[in-house]
Amino acid sequence: MKNTVSSELIITLGAPNDRSGKLSAIALSRANKALELLKQKPEAKLIITGGFGGFNPTNKPHYSYVRQYIVNKGLDANRIMGEIASSHTVDDAVLSSRFLADFDVGKITIVTSSWHIKRAKFIFQHFFEANKLEFVGSTDIEGNELEERLEHETKQLKILMRQGGVIVE
Image (cartoon, rainbow, N blue to C red; front, side):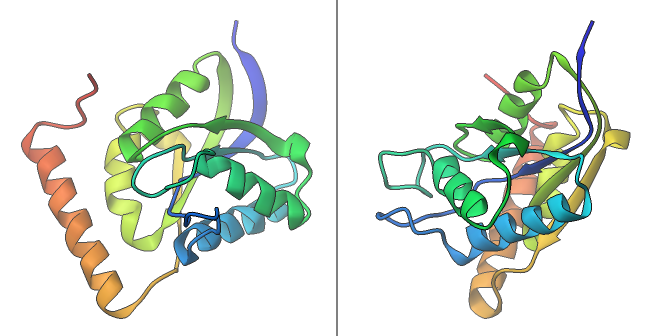
């Protein structure tokens, strides 16, 4: 029998931080969007993703900086259900699904950047029931950086589609 966690769960995806652990505009935007949703949904629990990779040049996992930020902003730490030491979006989905395997969760809201939703949705739907998923985007960049991100996302999504979906080794 599965454990019931809550009727709703929010997963905020990892993003860059600098060498001192300072969260990037992308990470702050995602964390703030998650906080906004958690205030609207007092029964919801939170999972924070992001461990190590090119987005985090420190010796502490990215999620620890996000955790510190949101708790400092007033979130009760007991609402944080878990932290996932992922290194990219596929990891976010795979490791979150493994973490939640023994839990019965109603709705799962994935918080990411608006420009990242299409690929995140494609990936997460390989590991979770599509009807349980909702995607909420934060707005965090504009101009040339946004164009570069959109180009990267389009390229990565095409690779996933060309290979027939998400492949986990």
